[in-house]
Length: 512
Image (cartoon, rainbow, N blue to C red):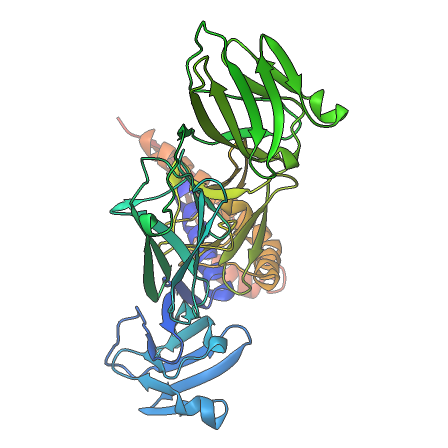
């Protein structure tokens, strides 16, 4: 029984804490994307009621009131230019902003107060974007071979992202393609697989997308004459390590001459003839070069950044027939030292996670939540080179582990952060967001704990007495005290200030 009593006491304490320290129920809505110069309505999920309410709209940063609705009247705050752009809709408590400007971006709060003083509030983030337009593709062709760099650009557009397509296929990094920059740069290794293809760039942000396209055959109009020449897939090497440039020309038992050379600058590296190998260049360079006669491949040790480039191998048979191949070598520094830095928007827990590395060439970034690779959705937005992830904190992302994968063609490294380590506030319901709330609860606990302990003690004591009476009743025994009939007269006549002791006749009865 005392447990039940204690439970009731604790329930009252919880209600008391809630009433004193939490004055409102607050919800964070998904972000709203607005277009520069256009209008937007900030929606409210609080259902309208027939009772008289006060509705206040305000900015969180800076903390400033925008509009107040009360007794059927609307009052707006701010400059005359700003108030002309503001319109409150009493039928659903929403706020309309016209002629959107970049500085309108930010977190807004709506507070609805009912007749009994109960407050319900919501937070909504507004992001204002300039529309993407003027998308254009510029092609740069590597001399000597048709390796192409396509660069996509726009004349206007905020926080623009880029996607590349070949036909209906969205492109990523593969043997023929490599994305770099903010995704706006696509390097194409020209082979028969990509010949005469139409490439399309899609430039986009949350409010608009725009496209441009280029036909590859219009860029690469070169033919190789006088020899059979093949472009092999690129080879990726690691800075300071060794790499072997392979050859797809099958070795033959006949005597051949094999020449390896750089295309840019055009310089010979090694020549194999009559089973002898001759190398060219400085002593430091030739020490790093090794030719393999058994398969005509070239090994380069202790790779340096300047070793990147296009190489050509020419195999000449006994009859003078030449067969050649081109291979591109890209040298990368390994990715290491990956870490995540978090920035929390004050007032609500909207987070920007920034991934960085201490080393790594042409580093790209991917973000994961568990096993799910993240893109742009209602809760997430990628910006920068993909290294920046903005998270709109809702119950969908609460207490999640986010992982950044930093990678390039030769390595990858990861770092992770647990969102609950960054944001220790719930999204809706009771929200403890600052030190004053915590101090309030701590102070109340200091005074309430002794009260709770005393209440539980009293409950247990009362429970023990009740159990004793119950046990006595079960044993069929009881005691009755009888008071003399003249007790009152004795008290009045003999000594009113010192009443005599009470005499009691105890009768015992036992049931059969």
